Length: 272
Length: 178
Picture 1 (cartoon, chains in turn purple, green):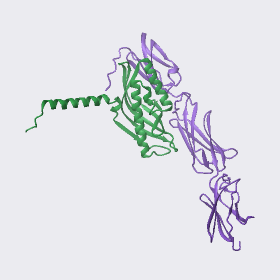
Picture 2 (tube, chains in turn red, cyan):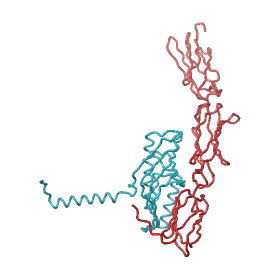
Picture 3 (cartoon, one colour):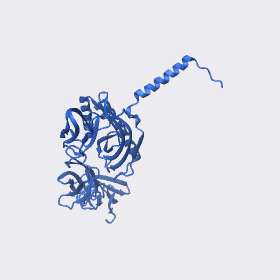
Picture 4 (cartoon, helix red, strand yellow):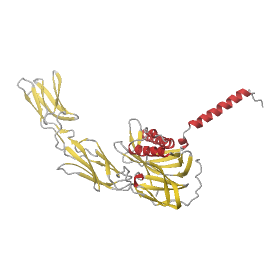
């Protein structure tokens, strides 16, 4: 156990509360004459000589939300400082790149703060919006709880930089989520004889199921199987297409794939 | 009944060792060791459930944070907050410790325990919010003189974020009790 509280000889002090962060507090200290006033709170500890009566605690000592205790010659009183109005949103968006049309793949958490970095704990409406310019955006209206609002949205169907915003009143914050093409929807290729006798294989433009061009650099694998064995060539998509040359063959089965997506198959030679 | 006789010197030595051990134990026992009940309830966590290993780590690091805070406020060593606090929580409490030191004030807190309830755990695992009802005795001091003391059950709103190998307290905000 702690030591007993000192005996209170004077009349009790009182503070009107709660007080909004950044505002002064008024303390009633009955009696007359000077006394030493102690203030303890989150982020503050002070002592000063005051005249009994109405004592003002300056606003710069009351900027952090929480419990404050004032002590004046053995008499103590507590009061609360609550957050000031919303001033800033701390917005965490995840991930920074997402496949187009991915379900529930975009996450956002908004933390609401006042100008003193206190969490604004009162329920506050927050609107989330995710969309690529000139495409229909997905919106969700929520209310914060304990200073936090969160959302889980589907990625849009169109690729490009999507603006992901969290707005509450006049405060808005924006993040960019890059919506990229998902896996190819289908791969179509054609084959022809190259001047040097090799088999030239080339795909049609490769797109995801929403019509977004699969990014350049994505690996496409061409494979040829004939009686001599199997030959594979990895080619990168360049300007929407993938192209490669396979070894010459009189009769071969040629296939194409990118990731888990398999394209069409061509039987080369033997009447083809 | 026969009892084996003990040499007076051996008895004295044994008693001395026992007393020394007890004294050492008391001397090294921090004030916060009084903390008794420790609970973390993650059943209301949203939008993501809290994995058991995470719950254990959060509870351990949060309670360790309180040990750091009580020690810092009692001894006026702001550096004690570095391990478990970050962001505004560290900034605010370091400021409190610095101001206490400047004025010759301190706070001694006896921590009787915490009841922690997780209310938010972000889907990407980058933030966890909880409500804590604590049981604290606080002694406000000037030098060695006790100015006042109180026994309270404060209601805290806590935001923790993961660091390299622990959870750190980013926000520790006491709410008014309704």
